[in-house]
Image 1: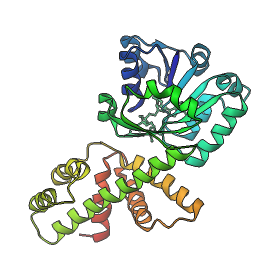
Image 2: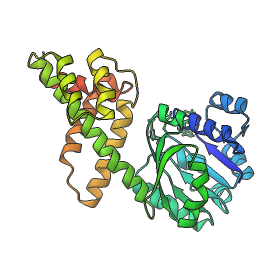
Image 3: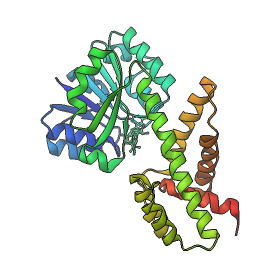
Image 4: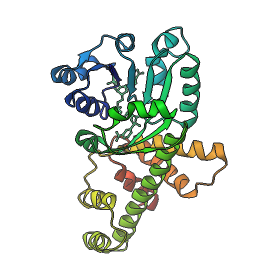
Length: 290
Ligand SMILES: NC(=O)c1ccc[n+]([C@@H]2O[C@H](COP(=O)([O-])OP(=O)(O)OC[C@H]3O[C@@H](n4cnc5c(N)ncnc54)[C@H](OP(=O)(O)O)[C@@H]3O)[C@@H](O)[C@H]2O)c1
């Protein structure tokens, strides 16, 4: 299998590195060329443009920022699109709206290509360790064929039926993550404003049944005011929008998510979009006032 990889950002770079290091012949491309250098050093072929990646490979993984980045890279809406995806398997690993992915699948199939949705849960560190959780959707044979590419990247892979089942699964998981971390942050803020010892609060929480890997990871960040990014508030807002959009489209109530949505909009408006999602604390502080 000759494999291509488009998008070497925070997630794409460690993922592509794992594929090269596990012996998969890889051709990569990134809009900002310098980001491809670690891949070249690890033995990947670096392409000059996306067209070269498609010309050299039969399966192409995309880990791009958003829908616009994907359409531009695929040449969607131009004659280049059919030339690129025809006869190839496209694996969409980023996070976009399920509706977008559904439409892209139809276009890829019409152009004679195969399409697999494979979004992942986990951030940069699990990506480096090959411990992402992958969700797949699409034609069963196509999903099976990309299994060996997902194995070096992920701890577990879950088949989620037809497209856009995997993205809907990813959004469902993210809904819990967003409400959980916002709830933890609000409780931390409440305890502090009530004059409690915030360290003691987090210890009590950590000893009880609500402790989780996520709460234990976020608690020290809240206590130390350490907002270095694990998952940026701006990305959380993007995911929040995607979930809210999918909920509205299907007429599903999502009151907790909607409250978080407003708080993350405020967090970003206050200038904390580039900080970790626990910076939602700033929005809670602003609502409370001095
Ligand atoms: N970070 C996480 O924890 C995480 C976890 C799971 C899923 N995701 C999802 O995975 C995807 C990638 O995330 P990331 O954290 O790796 O993002 P990132 O660091 O911002 O990387 C985005 C990638 O998209 C490229 N790109 C952006 N606009 C483009 C355009 N118009 N044309 C071509 N390339 C373009 C960037 O190229 P340049 O290098 O030139 O900017 C970069 O390679 C997103 O959909 C994100 O929501 C992220």
